[in-house]
Image (tube, rainbow, N blue to C red; front, top):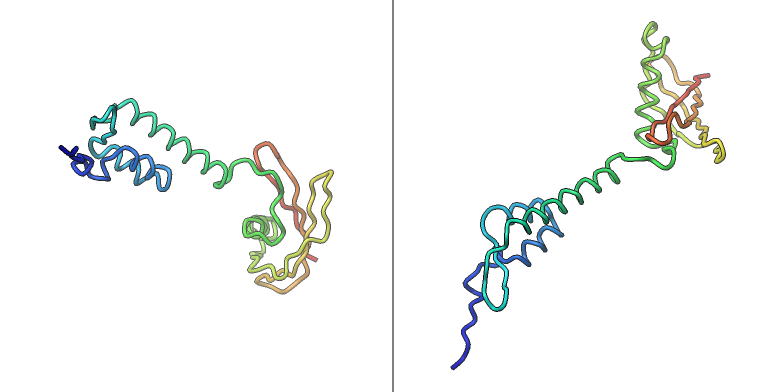
Length: 164
């Protein structure tokens, strides 16, 4: 007599190996599949539900993975100063110009910095000197700005500028 394969009785989306694979590939979907109902694994030839303990462990690992990725990619500790033409540098520079005394009293606005480039880099003091053309609401003028660490441990840096 042939043995009947009972693997077809459990849908693939309810099998434990599939849920773990889904957690590795796209963890929101994997967590959804894990907690939406019972998942089954094969133990000694018998399909049995996965214990709640295993589901909690997988959930904690997935949330930890999400947290590590957010810290690494989402602005955790920065190891180097941003480049002169980086969007975060130009946004910070625009905010510094507009919140300066000339920006508040005279209404000076920085519209765009054209051709931002690095003129000097001091690796020992971690200071980056940059230059470019500043398009303001009044005129177009050459601009120099400097990036330096305020608190490297927290990833905070400072921009100082001079419009000639």
